[in-house]
Length: 451
Ligand code: NDP
Image (tube, rainbow, N blue to C red):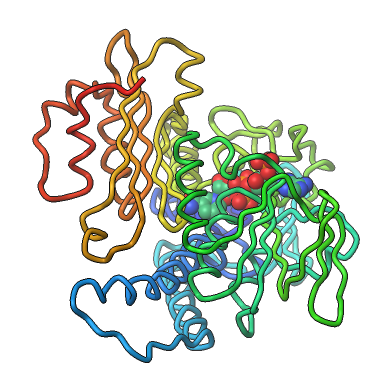
């Protein structure tokens, strides 16, 4: 090992890279890590964390309205975007410092610059064009927003810029129907922006259970988000009254802000992968085996750059499994089965396991579903429904999927995911006594299948 400058060099200081670097260093490895932007990566700097803060901010308007039904008078509530962004920036800076400090405390050498591959064991540090050597290299460069190549696309922003806007627009058009588009539609709408969601398909959130897709579309629309399906921008022009967005259905709309949330792509450009022989998939991600090893044996990759499941906790698990495999002598494959996730739409979604459609393709199922008005809205008067659905295998009664929409769905799904991961059956759910009065109790009180 002494022939190399490092035992491990990590390119990219996001969730996956930082976890791997810390754990490897704690195992006694000499570790270096390079990050060209800010430690913490997409999740901490311009993703999950600031997004959730913005979701909280955007939900107060409704909370003030709902409070009236409980006897409160809430007058003169005003919102200040600049104050929110300052507070968010301070929190992100705090977290970034913690990341860097923890790396340093573990003995990891930090390089605040871009790094590229110069060989199977060589990394070029772009700040001073110095080449360092490492027994193992981990690529953890994440992803970057993809923007379709249409005329005037440069007038639009992506989620990267959405966190830094100097002021809120009056009218926003958000393009896409995935996680980011739906979450930001809720954020802008909740903060009083006239919001239109433009989605090329028939129904937002492709890949999620249809009942959730329908329910969340309906609730978002009730809150004021204009959802236009079957339409996507074909050109954007700067007009006198704002941005003129020409749509594929022949119509056009005006907006002050257009945001593309049309997916993310692995960040591989300029890394020198091809020259070193690291193979890419057809979609342009780094190709890895079940142990995150690339086609070059000394080089591994984790997180969004590999295009497995693009979620922070998954990248963290992949980073940890890589360290177990390479530095602790315990070959470990990251487990990508039954990964729960939440979409912080308003209302939010929590989901784990198979959708009804996917489960039916595999065998006979029973569907348990309930749609109800949560207790809080009996007094608030808000017309909002919660949806809970269990997909159960007919043969052995195993719960194959849990799909939730409503307040607290993200918190609930984390716990339901443990049961599903353990192989719980519908009878296990039934045996569990309800916690009353909660919304979650419905999960254990659905008696008769609806399909
Ligand atoms: P998604 O893959 O979730 O959604 C992309 C959307 O853009 C889809 O609706 C897709 O449409 C549409 N789209 C793709 N290409 C085009 C195009 N050329 N023209 C028009 N529309 C297009 O990506 P996101 O960017 O929303 O998020 C990236 C990933 O980050 C997510 O998949 C998720 O893994 C992760 N993430 C997780 C979050 C969470 O856990 N809460 C929050 C945010 C992101 P179609 O459906 O027709 O393909």
